[in-house]
Image (cartoon, rainbow, N blue to C red; front, side):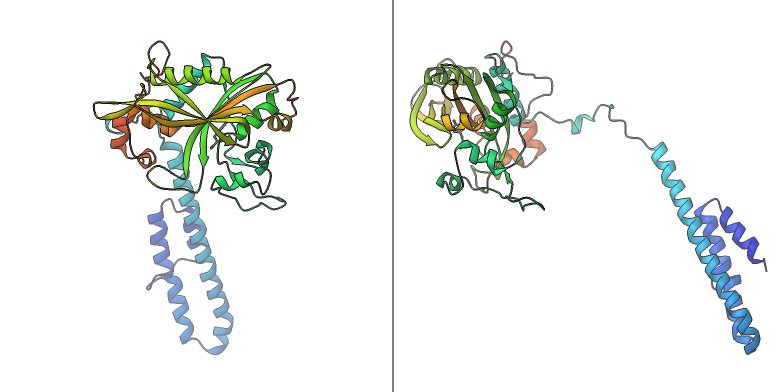
Length: 355
Ligand code: DAH
């Protein structure tokens, strides 16, 4: 039988998990050497057992922990080796069968950026988790204002030390406030992004996309608003016969407020934007409320402006002919192949924004 130190040395020197397992069996297995020592305790007289027992048990402990130590060392070394040698090369071209497409929503956002950049607008962004101040209060919707109930808001659990719950932004309008605060006036921005409302059916999903527009300058009028929207919608739908109709409406952050409809007509059995056989609503807009301008630290006697908010998913559906909003977020590769855009089809005004 090998002595204890030799056994422990061999365990510590084992090169592979297989070798280690053989050593374990040789020591602690049914016919193992340590097992045999443990068995021999039964045949000892009481005195010998009293001195040998603790030694044998201690040896079993040392062998067990030496085996465990070596095992984890070998496993770590194996993991290190794998991490060091197995690499994913993200620069390799994807197989044809898995190559993706640009989602229509991303495509439309790119189109919007292109169209508005041509009119001198920058693209602004804001957080999707928003404070109630930015999402509501600064937009002239104080607490208990009935307009807060117009939108089915997702409230977050307040974090420690927070006195007020934050919300998932219900619209892109808070970016108006953030842009004015950050950049002052004059300002021309669009802010595309995700928004959230607790609502779900064929035409509503809990997350959807909007684009906000904001212009603040001196002597801005409703005429500027109407021209901007008309220019935008004609460029977006790539038709000169896009007709707008503005209806008086109410939004807390604009005064006056208008809802904007575009004319549609039937072409090959489908409703398309253009002409005026009927009307459909496409966006909300108005002159920025003086109180909103003041909330951003600007003087409303000096600065005026207009704002608008528009559903991007809806724009995409109208332009590219989808009829179920939910398919936008199913991630079905067949739908994406059918409606998606190739990565290099970058929209340009000269090439066509919907290339
Ligand atoms: N924030 C509004 C909504 O989500 C849309 C909107 C209406 C935005 C009028 C505006 C505006 O900027 O002027 O329903």
